[in-house]
Amino acid sequence: MPGEVEADRGRAACRRPVRPATVPVSLAVLAVLFLQGLLPGAADAQTPPPPLPLPLPPVTMPAPTTPVGADENLRARTLADVAAAKKALSAAQRAEAQARQRAAALDRALGNLEGQRAVLAGPEREAAERLEVTRSRLRGAAVSEYVSGGKTTIANQLLRSVSLEDFTRNRVYGSAVLDSQQRTLATYRDQLSKVTVATSTLGREVDRVKADRTLVMQELEALTAQRALREQELAQKQVLNQLVTAGAPVLPSDIPALVLDAYVRGGAAANRRTPGCRIHWSALAAVGRVESGHARSGGAVLTLAGDVTPRILGPRLDGNGFAYVGDTDGGAYDGDLELDRAVGPMQFIPSTWKGSGEDGNGDGNRDPNNIYDAATAAAMYLCRARQGLDLDENLYNAALSYNHSSSYAALIVTKAREYINLNLAGLPPGPPPSPSPAVPNPAAAP
Image (cartoon, rainbow, N blue to C red):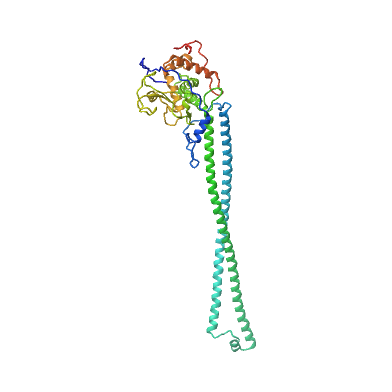
């Protein structure tokens, strides 16, 4: 662990046994934690899952694979679940779109009917007015006839006529006027009746369309909610598949895909900032393997943002077998208010992290229990200790600054060389072995 003070030497060093890496936690356990809501993405079905705080470009590395067995079966199941969720979402989207189309068609039909009803309103009003005028005239004529004592009666017509021809003419004229008024009244009454029937028919059709639209809008509301639920389900299935994939080792190595990505990114970031460092991802992989079994010590698992759950903590530095280091962080990193403990997948002492911590995943935080932050910080720490880390001798000396144990430093060089020799496809090749045996044999190291 970087920054630990050795009790008997009084300098930045660490004298502790190298802890063997623990057996990787099964991805089945990771899946269970996800489904129980212990990992990000296991949101309640009624609330959308929060966005993942991982502002990083796509992983530029080979597609991770998993060993044949339970992990591969779990990954296959999660892939099948994602495919099924996509199919269900597609069906929900189609149903919602069809309901929207029906609602739009009913809106158009309703608009047309309302327009037709508005057009009929004028003729209906005019027919009613003409009918009323004709009725008024007939009523007026009847009143006049009554007041005059019945000018149109046969007796009065005979008395007023000077001849038979005049009587016949008056009789025909009076009858014609009366018939004309009655026909006009009948015509206007018929026109009003037809317009009223048409308006009533349109009204019933408008009511029917409105009722249909109400039902369709209710259906659309339900389908929209169902589509949103399917989107949430797909997002959860995708997160679970990503977690399973990220936790699976990139064969033939033992490094989980997400952890390998952190090593590659951390080394690249350090080389951009210190071009003379030339650190290879394999050096960080060696440190991560020895310190925490690639962020899996104690059954820890990773979120897609690289956060370790639960936190990885080293032994209390109480002076028994290790240096004595009193609390320097108020328990902020290690949860210990009395003594310090090495923290995170790269096992930083809190006081060292305060000066060497990095934000490797761009989320604005420097967290020793985040593999991206820790890997970048470890790369920068090693680069500050020694340049030219593509040479075994320089890597050995840089590792001594990380943990002042020759056996530890030799193991780091050996492990780094083992990872280089795997020749993982898609990753930059590692440096060749140093020409001189500058690194002690780890078996012979004290």
